[in-house]
Length: 203
Image (cartoon, rainbow, N blue to C red; front, side):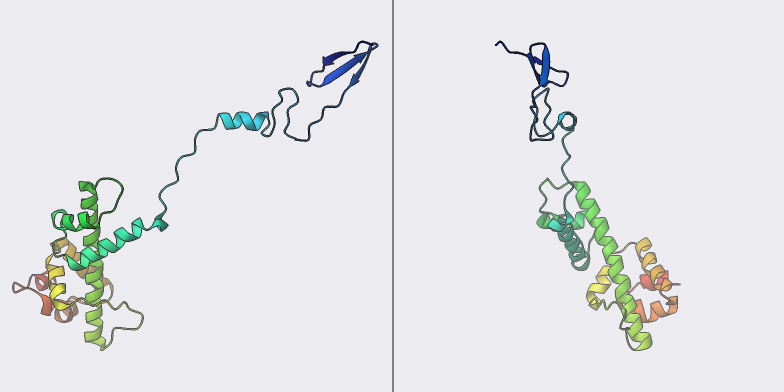
């Protein structure tokens, strides 16, 4: 007996015998199996989608690796140890502490210098506030930051600030409740230069 086969619209073989047609089951155990094409695993829709999918971009650097923390520590060190916080004044410091994978640029140095100056302002404000609290109240307060800068270093820190930055320091101290007279008497008089530049800004 001669047997003939055909394929139905779904790609399944059909046994032709004596004018009768019997579908021969060819079910795959993989639910994603496409009978017509023979694809396994992904399925047509998922596979086609994968083909047109663009490559995933690399994730951004993870701050937990430590680079941001190292830079932050370096900024604080520079603000508390260097007198000149201009870009030229911090350049050697930055080059010694730089550990980036790319070459150091002038923009990196400029940004570092700006951040160091901002950190110095924070330190000076907290240090003078601590001095004022001890002088006026006899204690600094248990909930207040205890920032102490040696008198010699504090004088250098203040002398390294521009006029606008000093005005910012005094404005922040006034916003904490101190008067110009208190700031002048207990805060800056002993660390002012001979020309009384700091006291002059307080009127």
